Length: 198
Ligand code: HEM
Image 1: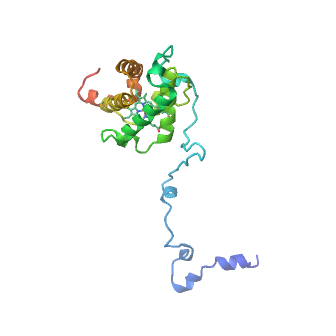
Image 2: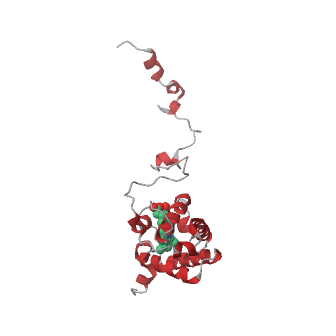
Image 3: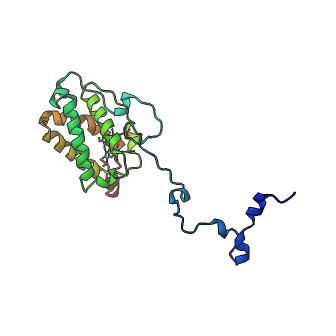
């Protein structure tokens, strides 16, 4: 085959200057793309919702992990949807600034959490919503949260409800809906260490 212009370009000019073959093509000052080197895939936020996409799952109200109250009493005690929104936003704020548990929330999508928590609370309180989030077991899998973390989170929820004028009886009724979820949202690390089971 006759030498072409392309083949002529492939002969490294550095060959005559003593550089190793191929060195001419390596830009030693170019920044290294470490994500590519380590195969890290970064998900970008949806430009409309601001949320980071999650793997596909089947949506169902059953994923909320508790059946709704009947009647309007609980929704009213929380101040309807606007009141539930205030409780959820404050609850998320407390959790993400609480030195005991903020590290667990650090790398996660708080835009999505605020939306799905609102839907979950609103559904359970019978305030007119559907829950579109994941079930409690799969969404908390691998977080490594313990019973102590759950206790801290419940204290924060109590504070958020108290600050937003939810009466004590309604607070306790709501917490009694969440309590059975404990095995799905936390691991019993300390209990196991102590050799005890609840
Ligand atoms: C009964 C108690 C709890 C309830 C009702 C609850 C509720 C929820 C809901 C609705 C979601 C969103 C699911 C989705 O994205 O589809 C979620 C996610 C999350 N929860 Fe909880 N949770 C509870 C306990 C906890 C505890 C104890 C911790 C840690 C201290 C925790 C940390 C998180 C984190 C970090 C996420 C985001 C997970 C992700 O982005 O993949 N949760 N939780």
